[in-house]
Image: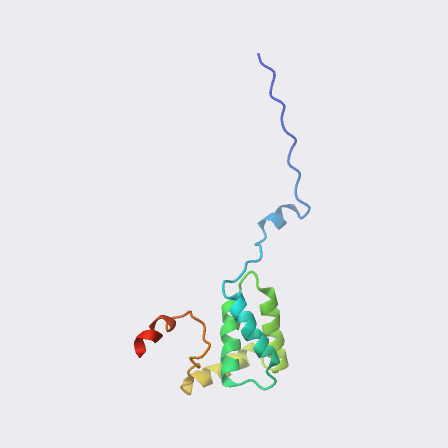
Length: 123
């Protein structure tokens, strides 16, 4: 008989335990850099325009439940507090804005979404 191979030491649990290993890691959102510029503009807006309200609402929806970009999520919450708006009030106002035929300005828009790839064809 051959001697049994030497066993390697048992792996030690991580300091956070098994739950820490299973916790989702923060992710980087692909539009973070573009959205950061918009959020900074919103933070500087003492009196929000219709476009500001629409931007805040769309970014809140984009980052809702996203496991990361905590800086943007925190700053969007700060924007709502500064404007003294709840999410429900913001969404109510933006629904009214869209119902009044609001259309975002084409200048400086993001090159994403259903309309960006057709703008060159509309000439």
